[in-house]
Image: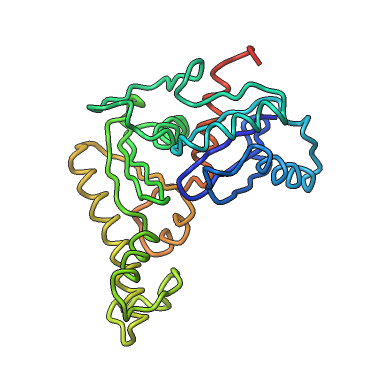
Length: 260
């Protein structure tokens, strides 16, 4: 099986993929200081819970936006699974799509991998939204080329900044408001309304502007931990793909062919 690893700014997601399907997935908080040995202890226990040994890992592929985390993930792969890790965007795992932007090398690996997976699954012009540490909205055109996008603060970052900067505002849990009313009657209700409905309005507004700029029909594909939460309160999404990055890594691995 393939061990696909998506190392993001907040979490590292590890998934076991068999014949293109995710068999199991786990996440751990991103910490660049976490050693390969620490990853191994954590991951071996989780593999065992799925009835798998470390010999089940036949290959490892990594996408990361945290360069300092890569070395320890490479140690994990070599030392504990006995395989040379593949890194998305680094030979022999080329992107295989056009990055039609001014600075292709600066595009986050997760955004390119998401674009690959979204185009393979849906085709046509797409707006791909990833709700992560940052919220990104990317345009993938009908030919599968990455055309650029938008980076906005993630909703948790926005909430943290609000609480940190305003001494009298309490920390609140991020959740869907209990009603559709936007006018709150308590401080907590008003904060939740501003954060939640403000974010919904931002996404709807940015998608509308992107579609107008694209000038052709475009489907909206969302991924990330908060996609399901927002989907219940907006009709802007055409599809939700919880494992989009993992699917993209699996596709990139499969493109290498019988070298495995």
